[in-house]
Amino acid sequence: MGTTDAELPGYTSKTVPGYTAQTAAGSSTAPAPFRTEQSYSLETKGKHWLWIHVKSRAPAGASLPYFVQGDTVAGRVELDLEKSESIKGVMIQILAGSTAVGQEEMVFLDLKQDLWPTGSDKGGKIDKGKHSWPFSFVLPTKVDAPTDAKGKMSIDAPPSFSERASPAYIDYRIVATVKRGALKPNQTLTKSFAYTPLIAAEAPSKMRQMAYKEGTDILGPDGDPYGWKVLPSVKVKGKMFDAQDVEVECTLALATPLTYATGAPVPLYLTLESSNEVALDTLADPKAIRMHLVRSIALGSDAMEERAERRSNTFFQTGVGQAYFWPPTEGAKEPGKRILRGEVEVKRSVKPSFLFPRFCVRYTLSLLQFSATGFVPAGGVSSKATPLASEPVKIVTQQFPGVVPRSYAPPGYEKPAESDYNAAVGYLENGNQRFYHHGGFA
Image (cartoon, rainbow, N blue to C red):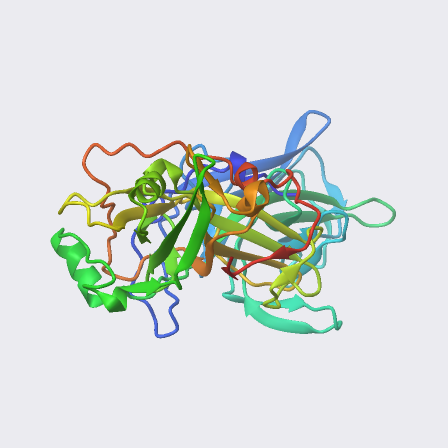
């Protein structure tokens, strides 16, 4: 399998420069700053004799070549023979496939080029010494993926995906093959590479675009109703200091559209209302708020279906980002009401959302039960596993053209250390062995 993502370098915006304007379909064509050539070789009895040389977007010293949607994978294959040898042929391939642990790989991309013999050559023997053949492949935007019905479906090429302990993988690789005749086995040199599709976020509201451009503050849901999705309010019930029953109405708003690019913060807006001022101050403490960007991996024949219930042996969740909040700096506290601003940063390492046969990656923003000294939620410990509010969102790889989001956290604000999502909801490391219900409200 390919190298794990933990071994990949951090591909920053400097690695992949700005792209051209978006097409009507939301795709784009990237320039080709292939400044890094990487070489990989096959060794026999201490001698390196077969090489793949390839240029890519990878920064110098990276372990893997790196390409994005629409790129050309180009390079050369070299042989260095100590003597003339009988060889049936030399071939280069681009292969890609998805694999669930314990199952065979499902290949969805197989591009081939015969490097030798070509034209009038009939093969047979290659002379002693060095030989070199160039190759070039254009990575397709769409691929034909096998389905359970023994057919194929045309679908967007997914990103490469390889993480330690992952239940499934998507591996892109370059394969050079030296075909031997008679009873001799073929010899192959394989190198995985990282691949990212180019998917742009939708346009923010005009008022938010203006705020980003002019460096002014963004407005909340009342001032910019087109810039937010206000989720239905939820009542948080519990006891304060094991004595007084309290109820706090919680309303969460998420920046719209609900497509968020990696490498930027997502604005959040949280309103708490109650007649109990002590309960309000307790739950309005930013340290009491637990909100996560949650990644879900669905496997199996029903992975592409939008279902509200999945078994834990084919459904895996992990937190990939934690929200942080702060009280607004303007104005005094309003009796019976607290407002907090917040953000969740979508790290550049987060994989984009994708739907693919038998392997899908989705995301939700989930507000969990509050955790504060002196407050015991109704339902006790069991209530912490069910989100108070949860909204599906889409993670993409590019900002809308011309939009440069910024953080609005107060000057000097220190983000809290991220907590473990599985620990927060009481999951075991590899699932909690129960049906999981996602979406909706408690």
